[in-house]
Image (tube, rainbow, N blue to C red; front, side):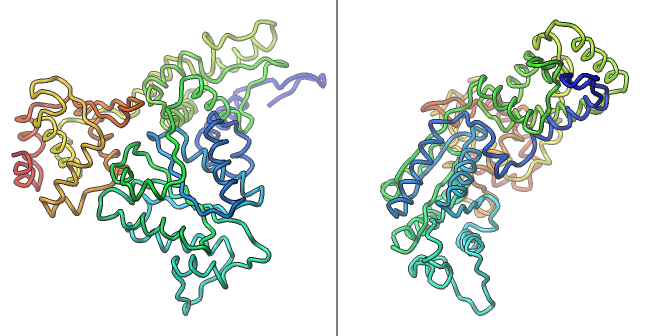
Length: 457
């Protein structure tokens, strides 16, 4: 990057310098943030951030062992906000933050061991081969022999992400109940924060679950201005900025290009994660443009640098709407109908559940072009399948796993996902093929054909 002679001059951007800006912008969109870098971003969830911080500060101040529950559709900033809170309170010396993603556990019961191992690392305790420590034993004893109470009075802040993994069915509810029961021990020294992508989990509505919950917060979807703010902050995180002169910059994305990406890639649902990934994808694809494109772009930047006219983000930018549209068309391209036979077996059972709910008449008529089904209804139907069929029991997943399958089915153009908000969050609108076509094109190629057809009866 070259500089003009006078001291106040801004850099002169050539092709290499512009490439560096695009790389830094993509890095800001993709990087996993922690430490001061995480706290450097201004939260668009200021009210929620302050509420969660206050919850945990109060628990630490009064020595309470509380459980707090955060919910919201994917990509609305739940985990990001909690990570900011964890980092903030860690720097204040109030907590030992412990993060466990329940979706990554080998088995539901493995959560006890993983939580214990994370906490022991916080206390810098090394287990020997002869140790017989258990999580319950440590909570009952006040972590005797594990932590030095005279020098370390910080509370354990245990964050259980993807909590719905532990409460998919009543059979697994005992796991979360056992974890929360640990908080009743005087020496537990722990606050638990659960995060769920599923807004309404029937199991969590049980009275004995509500009685164990000290606070709940539902996250609304991001608005378009909030998504724009998030993108701008993340792209500038590592200095990805083209400064033409003092106070004037050359935009990376056209405004209309960002609006188009938002509409095509999760922005309408307030899903910041999908939007960030889509914008990163667009930037990385632009790095593969020809040298002629980069030369032309550098010339355009220098022209704006030498005159007093400021660039209009609605008119010029590194990424224009035409390029963004071309690249995003390759994201989530619909699969051939022939690939239906290669779907994982669970996909067949999810389709079957949709069909059963549709035929039941509670969600729309048999002849309706589209019907709307809640995630709760879908999960309950899959649980019903599991009770009727051992084959299903071995493949049925939690909410997050089923959501991945539904995404695949959406790519097949068999489903259209509608994530409405308020009381109607977590809805799927189904635009299915006729049942006869399902049976001939999908279920006919499934190794579980007989089982699927029996479930449809």
